[in-house]
Length: 199
Image (cartoon, rainbow, N blue to C red):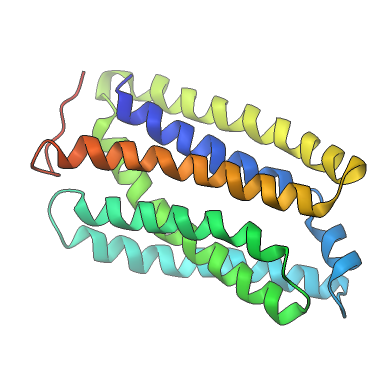
């Protein structure tokens, strides 16, 4: 497996896996900490994130496709990863539904920036004859990471506090974003971001 694939997998493991810590407790966090929270408000918050990602990833994908190579994909992937990594820290400062909705929009936008670039770069470095294996490795790693995070998120919130979870998620997400720096360095030191050496 190419080292860039490993970097992309590790990036997703840390970012998506860490956000998995939030998912089982997010509704409880809103109910306990955000004034005016109802079940409908929780649904709206989730919808904002998903709809934002669904809409903007198409726009981002069309924009990145207009340029040969994967320079734009690298930029959107890195910026999106940073946006997602910063969001958990701001949950600590959240006090109203409008704040939550804004952060959910930012979370969705970050995901929209990440998705097209991540997919394009992963596919470019994936070998046709081993694509099934390489995608299976990705899904297995992310599945185990998400499963572990779901349990740990609930456990940490039960034993410690929401603050511990959000800080931990932010730090882990930044670690995940750092793997994108490795991808950047590999691409730009070659002098041509459209070239791919498959091994």
